[in-house]
Amino acid sequence: MHFHGAVVPLVTPVTASGDLDEPALDRLIDSQLKGGVEGIFVLGTTGEGPSVPRSFRRRMVERAVARAKGRALVYAGVGDTCLADSIAVANEYLQAGADVVVAQPPVYFPLQPQELLGWFRTLLDAADGPVIIYNIPSTTRVSIPLDLVASLVGHPRLAGIKDSENDARRHEELLRQFGGRADYAIFIGVGVLMLQGLKLGAHGIVPSAGNLIPDVCHRLGEAARRGDWAAAESLAERMNAVAAFYQKGRTLGQSLAALKAALHHRGICAPHMLPPLLPLAPPELETIQVEMKQLRLLD
Image 1 (cartoon, rainbow, N blue to C red):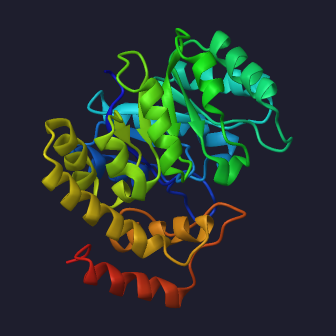
Image 2 (cartoon, helix red, strand yellow):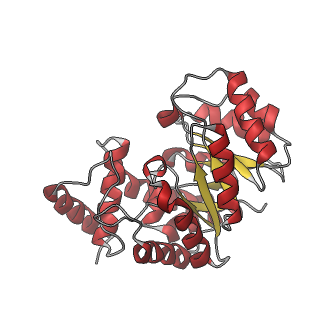
């Protein structure tokens, strides 16, 4: 299985003027490689993908590819509402060196299953490389039906699915129907459901907490691969505790600001956010620092 393990969805480091902070991106990627993760995912939800200016999206992919140097696979997010643009962007990222693109459903129009199926089938037919479909109804407002997944499985360009729907039963059924295939990777994108998914045979996880603790996320995947569930449970507990400190009581956007604030205290990137999201206020920055010390995330 080419696509597997811990794939960390990176934040997008930006300068005060909103441009890509390339040295910060390098530092972030280096920390992931040191932690041993199998993949890095740019321009995803954690990376504020839809808010990233088109002017530096390809540059970010190229920078990630150059920095990773084959030591981790590079996943690149595609989230355009226009199908023609999604196809063009997907192929642009693949041409820039991405190993796979991760495509979410288009937003704005409420979609019927046949419309969604047509969208993904056309994208897959036109893609110049592997595609992972991305189910995240919390942001797209549409859940990709499992019978639609079944209609797409076997397409030569379809590499798998990243499922970020907070539904344990759905994940059980997803893995029951499509797990165990050598040509179809299943990634779990909900932190509290990752251990369950791995126990049921998921190929990998996509934990935002990996920005801070890539080694823990990597070792969780390795423990699951070995069947060492005692170690896996301990590592999952640590991962979820770290995730909870920046997510609990916050909206998705606020939690991403808190994650960037934590990376700021680590000296990796500035806490700047891309509009419409806002950075944390100074008092919250101080609170993040205190909580990081309590969680042994700072010396």
